[in-house]
Structure formats: structure tokens, C-alpha cells
Image (cartoon, rainbow over all chains, first blue to last red; front, side):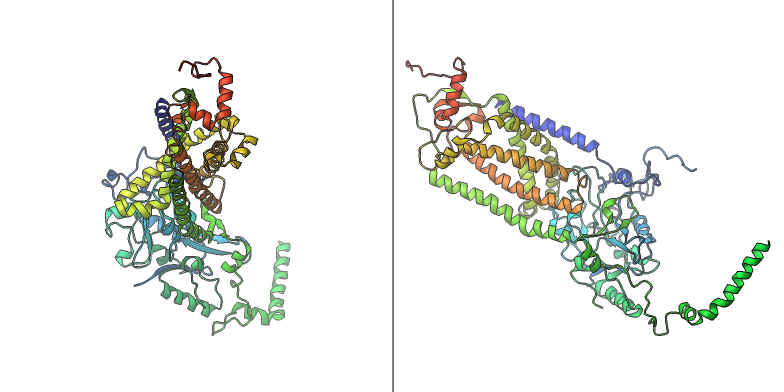
Length: 79
Length: 198
Length: 345
């Protein structure tokens, strides 16, 4: 019985560890599919939002109709 | 009732990517997600053709069939839509889709890649038509406003046709007869199990 | 300056000569389309284009160049999606149901025919011998618990929408399926670790040898009441071990490919991974059902081996006589083994 309980606990711990590792290695499509020509360090207002996952936070759209910028404003990188 | 379809006349498509841009703007589609894209075949060789491709809203849609949570449904207009509330982001629809339409907000691994996103034929989702909730999840609903998908509406060479299948097939047929050639209705055989008979 | 004038002169001469020599051709070239829309020269400047039929003859899917960084988007049409649909919706539910229900029916029939396999009482009854130590039991149960959750959440991908969704409604099922997916993805890791541990711990005792062949020829004790000789693991248990090792490796490999989609394969490769994963999955589940049956309901005394780790010596001598002898010889002075039945008892 002790071995069984230890096994269940170990499975849960390893599962949580896997979850943390996999979630942290997850990349957003806007990071993965951006070229050097595309400045998407801070995606800006033309997007639904940087943390968009199709299931938006309810407060995200209250202030502005098409989402708002999160984080600091991007520096204009013009050369 | 109409049976909505897309038809890309590749002999007219000039790969301007305006359909892609219009779609992205109309629906606030995030970076990295392309509901519509233009694929160039035989690039740089004689006979090069570009085809604008999105979800074709198939008959007996493979995505809907393989979905383990049945989140897809077909509207009365023959448009294949899905519910992002039920979707679990498993990615099976991408494996089944002959046109590579389904997209996911995260791409690193299978675990938590978020809800699938795809072309809605500019007709939103299961939420009430033209509601905010619908806009946030699926983009605008032009069909409910009596308009056709924006990509086809604004195509500068009228290569991309959207509308009732029989009607756009007739338009394409007349074009082919008039100019004497046509590379065919791309993807129709796979999507609708029929093609435009000339 | 003079050179420019000479050049201009030459160009003028050329321009004057050109229409004279090619008058007929150039006139047509300027207006190739006549009033009826037909081109009299038969030249159709954009007509010699690629078409779907031609490209499908060259390769099974149509791929082109794409201007976005998502390489997957370069596939224009992959009709293999229809075949995948056919397999997943046309074949897989039937295969899965037949294999799993068939195994359950076979086990039920065997239970009705053979009943519970009991051990004859002997003078050694009541004494205990250690069969699996704590680490072995830990490994077994970690793998087993993960396997049960993985198999249920895996079957949910096939049968959930058919059986569970009508019962609890789409929204509740969607939430449940989301959690099932998380558990499938995350518990796959302790499962894979457990399979590795099991291989390391037990491979030594699972090398097939001649005794196994004798065991199989004797029907393994399932048929008749006579028990053939067996070492620590009999041929049936070795079969389970190698099934877990082999199928576990296959499920792990295909599962990792699916966990990191498109890391190695393109979309067709992913379809094949899916097919392999699901087919092996249902066979694996059926095999483990038989393992669970014989370890619990099917044989009296067998569960103790994984429950407490200690089995009845009489049971051990019946089923694993060679192992008991070996063990008693090795730990003759060991406290846990009553090596020689004391006459006083």
C-alpha cells in the first residue's frame, strides 16, 4: 500500500513537472512565425492581444473595442 | 438555401496577398495565424500559378469528422464553423484538413496550444450574430450583414470567388469558355468531391 | 559625343528596317486577340499553367512556395487528410471496440469456463515469501496508475464523443476532454519513466529460455490443473513484460512525435504517427486487461505479489517453483523466507 501511495504521488509530481516544463517551452504563433522583418516584440493594438488563445479574458475588451496594448509601449525602431 | 464555396481562379491570381491582409484586418487575426494564404506553385518556372487558399468549407468536412469533441458544425449555408468553447486544441483537424486551414495560437507542443482558429467564411461562430463575444472569438460576421467574405469581395482581379457554389462555378465556366483555358477549380475535387465541368 | 550620335544613328537605321522585315508578325503581336475572343495564333500566354491533375501525378500532395514563415502552410492540398478521416472515423472505432470488447468477452468466457485459479493447500500455506520489493512495486504502480488514466483519456479521443457526449452535453464534455487531454499529455512522462524503470529492473528475469517453451507446451497451467515449471516469471508474464516494453516504447516514440508536432515529420508523417499510436493503443489496452484479470480476479493469491509484495509460499511453489528454489538457496539464512518448513508447525 505504501508503495502504491508513493507511486501515485510520484506520478502526480512528475506530471506537474512535465506540465511546467511543457508549458514554459510553449511558443506563441506570433513568436514562432515572425521573421526578422516583422517587429513583433510587442504586438500592438492591431491584434486581439499578445496572450490571445481564443478564450480571451473578459476585461481585455471592456476598455477598448479591439483590445488594448499590454506592457510598455514599443520603441519606434526606425532606421 | 445557398451552398457557400470558395473558388480561386488561378489564372487570374496575381499573388498580391490582399486577400490575406484583408482577412487579417477584418478579423483582427493575430500574428502567426493565417486564415487565408497564397501558395505559389512552380515558383519562377514557366506555368507558375498562385492559389489563394483558406478553409474550403468541405462537404463531409474531414475536420468535423475527426474532431474528438464534435466542436464543428455546418450552417444552413454549408459553412463549416466550430465552437472555441468546446475545442480542446488537439490538432487532429489539422491532420485531417486537406488545405491546412486550422491554426493554433501556440505552436511549441501539443499540451496547451490553445483553441483552434480557422476561416469562418466571415460568418462568426455559434454565439449570437454580431455579438461582442462572437467578434472576440471569431472575428466579424459579414454574412449576417448580408455581405460575402471580404477576401473575395475585395480581390483586385476577381480571381477569388465566394458565394453559392453553383453560381460561382457558372461564373468560372463562362470565364474559361471566353478565354479558352483555365487551370481548374483548385481543391474542389478534394473538398466538394466534384469539380467544375467545362 | 560623337559616339552617342553614331549609336543613335544605328538605332534609327534599325528602327527603320525592323517594321519592313517583320511587319506582318508585329502587327499580329500587338493585337493577338480578335473580336471573337479567340487567339488566331493559338498562343495562349498563360494557358500552359500547372494544374491540379498534373501536380497530383507528380506527387501525392501539392506544395508550393509561401511568403509566411509557417512552413506547414506551403502545402496547398493534401488529399491524405481524407484517408486519415476514413481511418479515424470509419475504421478506428470499430477496431477499438472489437479489440477491447472482444478481449473482455474472451476473459468473461475464460472465467466462466475455468473459474478462479486456486492454489491447493499445502503445509507451506500461510508462510510468506518476498516476491517484489518496494521499488518494484512502486515502479509497477506508477506505470499502472498512469496507464489507466492514459488509456481512459486515450479512449476518450475515440469514443468520448460517441458515448459520453450525448450523456453530459457538449460543454461539460468539452471541459472534461480538455482535462483528459492535459492528463494524457502530462502523465505520459511518468508512464514513460515507469516503463524504463520496469525494463531496467526486470529485463534480467525476462530473457526467454527453454523452460518457457515447456511452459507454453503445457498450456501454462490454464488448461488442466497441472502446473509446469517456471522461474521468477513464466512465459505468460514474460509476454506481458515484453509487450509493455515494446508497446510502451512504440507508444512513447509515436506519442513524443505527436507531443511535439511537426518537429520531425510533416503532416503525412503526423497522420501515420496518429494511426500507429491509436492502433497500438487499443491492442495495448486489451493486453493489459488480460494482465489485470489474471492478476486479480483470475488467480487467487496473485494480487499479493504487487499488493504487499509478499506471496504465499504455497502459491509461489505452485506457480514459480524454480524461482522459490533459487530464492531459498540464495537467502537460506534470510529472515523473510521460511526456507525449510519446520517440523514443529
